[in-house]
Image 1 (cartoon, rainbow, N blue to C red):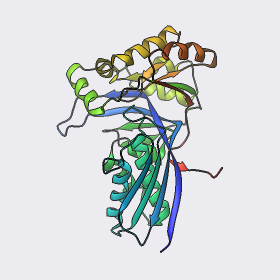
Image 2: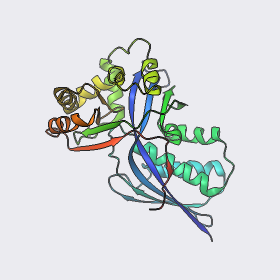
Image 3: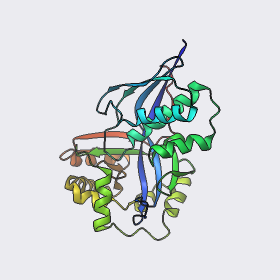
Length: 297
């Protein structure tokens, strides 16, 4: 029987603005977030065997290789929607760290959905695809769009924004995985900083107009206080960024990664400070678009 194969890039993200409200009766927290895709990517290969059965995954790097992997869950959800059993083989090359606030697992799942959409040739609507994505996790729909976008609801309502310029950032991680559930539980316990007046409107305007000088003062993350309480090394990284005369440093999502926006002349100073605590550091930049076909090299 014929087999089809496709390879995709699954980008990471940072939250330039993350406002979290009190927990709702359904257990979720309402959010408003300005999300930005970045050039750090996992590589996802999806192979469709129309005459096969079952879903298999081969992982290179640090990620679960069983049902806990969102790639498996994404393939299963697509198969159930299609109501046509088929075999799926997934190859996953991890570059995005786990439990780091960078959305790697969600992006991988979005790549599997996009890959199966392209390979199956089935007429799944945009609304149906996004519904499948939202059923897998709050961040998954964003990666179908990527670029610069506003997320609302529990994070699954995505509204594309004017694409931000390819601004350089430094990622720093203390080498400690941080559970999103634990961060939200701590947030419920101790709260977070009060969101800025006007919410993300000023940031969205500055990104659209490429007013780079104003962006640092408009970054915000409601979960930063809770994450620091759980992992003090996050606070140390943020403090080190400030000591290097760089004010534009913020927690990525629920952590534990910190991102720093700075100009070229500030890179050495920030890196020298933060490498005292960081287990890894990475220079990258903003990216347009979300999951995308990997062009042959």
